[in-house]
Image 1: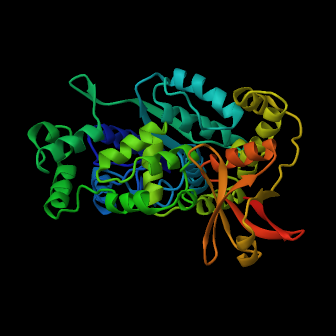
Image 2: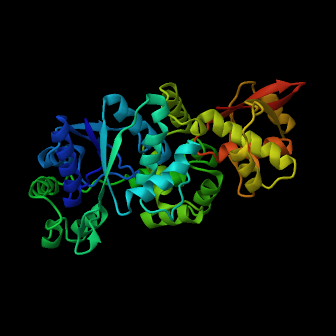
Image 3: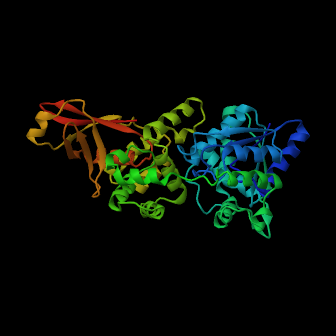
Length: 428
């Protein structure tokens, strides 16, 4: 099979070149062209302009033999995880050749990809590199050769341009929206006739454009406590405190501004907003990655245990006097066995006598980080109690790194010890 992974939102003349190349290869080897089409959210974690059914029709009309939906990934996982999952899926499905487009020569892509394939970790590809996602795909494909004893053959064609500029799906969507959902003459020049017909029906039926439910997102950002926000995937302590500080939210622009203040870039912001909209928890992402770990589709350095080990190693290194940055570098350079991280530990809390009498062992103590960076807990048991956690420095650093890991879950409950209460914290 010949494979293409795509959004096709909408399918334009640049995409047609991919399909034409795929069909050319398929006819040569007597195979078929299959499109792995993202269904619910785009590869960049945004809702689609056109519906899945419309985009599927566009692909089939353009010459694809089959369309396979990819769903449930792009509002839960970063590209560092979704790309290995999609490539493993394609290899196991029997895809032999993969077609993509790039505006840099394949030699450069291979050279840059070699480093990431060797490391076996596919996050943190520098923004300065051109066609970063093509580099990621190439690197993951090389990496999986060890697992499958084969890899897909990559066919990289030049990106199609019109009047010297790359055709952009984002610009096409923007122009349609700016022109009251009409396909103008300049936009029509960039689209195949079949796409125009399908898209016009979508627009007429008001199925496009798709949008995020910002009312739901605003409601959560305005009402949820720090502890409740921390249960949602991809929200770190800095962002949560920024959310609380700038309440209330009335517009979409206010939301984006708050994410920018917390240091979130556009892609991570879209993923986090999608996770908020779909109510994706840390626990859900953790379990999903575990499912793909069992299938052997998650590279070793991106496994859940490795992330927990990193937090533990860095916290122990910081205790010895290393800076956080140097500690992270030491972890990446580390080749020997690592000490087993603490998965369960206790923290002290400050309670009044009257509160001690009313509390019960086993009650949930939800953790959050205050605006002054103090790690605290919130207890609701017929009354609302907030208390700072009392932890040794190394454990406080470790817990903070887990909190800011984006998806490693943790839970905490009250335990009774020597007549007083403590909080028992479990990681993962």
